[in-house]
Amino acid sequence: MQEIATHPAGASADFLPLNGTDYVEFYVGNAKQAAYFYRRVFGMRLTAYCGPETGAKDRVSYVLEQNKLRFVLTTSLDTKSSIAEHVHLHGDGVQNIALAVDDASSAYRETTKRGARGVIEPTVFKDEFGAVRLSAIATYGDTIHTFVERKNYRGAFLPGFAVVPGPDAVAEPAGLRRGDRRAWMRGDMIVPATQEKPPYWRVNRAENMLMLSSYHLSESAAPTYLDSLALFDPVVIQAYPSSIGFLATWMLSAGTRYRGISLRGIVTSSETLSDLRRREIESAFGCRVFDWYGQFERVAAIGSCEQGRHHLLSDYSYVEMLPADDGLFELVGTGFHNLSMPLIRYRCGDLVRPAPAKERCGCGRSFPLIEQVIGRVDDSIKLTDGRSIGRLDHLFKGVEGILEAQIRQDRVDAITFFIVPSSTFNDRTRETLQSNARYRLGGGIALEIRLVDAIPRTKNGKFKGVICNV
Image 1 (cartoon, rainbow, N blue to C red):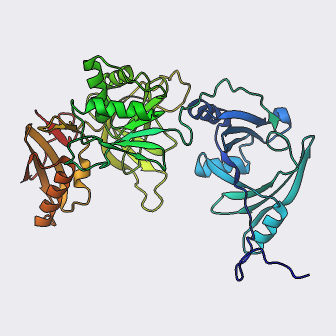
Image 2 (image 1 turned 135 degrees about the horizontal axis):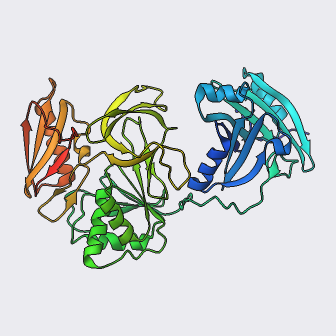
Image 3 (image 1 turned 135 degrees about the vertical axis):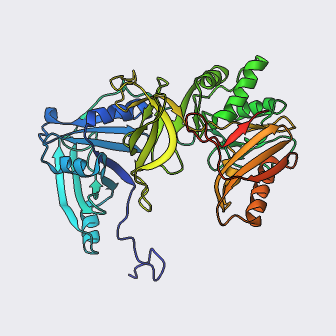
């Protein structure tokens, strides 16, 4: 009988068919603490455990799951083990990306004969729930890929792990799941700046996201913004504090409340969020605000927890604090993520006020507490048509020949750019800056560019990019 080809002529069969990611294993310094964090913050559920109680003498592992995600957090019980050495060299991090396969022996054989270095030859592990076949190869650095064949296994995770029955009393879902509706109100140009009538928003169907313009906020437009939000009814809103704060202030002054029913949280970032503005937003929208601080350079990150306290995320980067005036400290960061161009001891110029060293947050996390972030303190500018616009750093993107710049507004129909030029500043620089400003602000405001030798700092040494005296 003639064999029928099941793939096109000239095409080779897949030598490594994969069924997806089975789990990701992290080697960490304190698996119990890390598991608490992932359960409490991200809502992951503890489903399985192994340790001395289950017969493991060298390690403790917690298995966490959420939808299709499965994390394994492992800590060594022996300070001289390979697990401890991995944490010593790399800190908390991924050691094993396990891949689900139908045949772990074939996966091992096909990859090693093509040059992969074998770590674990195909081995069967059994318990009362069945058998799992595992094999593993080395990938990059100290990370490995384990091939998991579990078609004959019905246990919670792997042999040697005990089931942890639910529900998980610690886990609290963060509120946003894959596919949930989101609203986005940041620096993107959603509609032309010259557009005078709503809608000032568009729906991104691919990401199930309502994207609203931050450049058309005004008292007259506020009701239409809020109607569009209530109609779309997002689960979470991601916004500049100045943008979502504008709508909150308008609602409170108008004596109205947000009418959406699904909103569980608002995430603010890229600007400093004051305590007053946080309270206004939470009062107007009826949900919790989670604030995030970071920079384009990615050398430090600070996030707020469910208690409303800010934490310095010490597993994101190595941060030093240089003393400044009035109990403030300047952040100096060394990032862990930028492998192309690492920034080492980078002074970003932002200031924070740390909490007392021994103070602990009620959320239970061990990340250092930050009492106050003195970060981006720029004003919003006001336009003649009633619009209020914040975060104007976009005006300088793609503009060369500028060392420093400040935008100042002393009357409602004009703004002035104070520019410290470099040697490459030229007429093209002026034209590009003016074009960017017209694109985002429209033509109803006069623009002036002044070249200066230096731009004054505030009394605490902070650079302020936008000053509005209107």
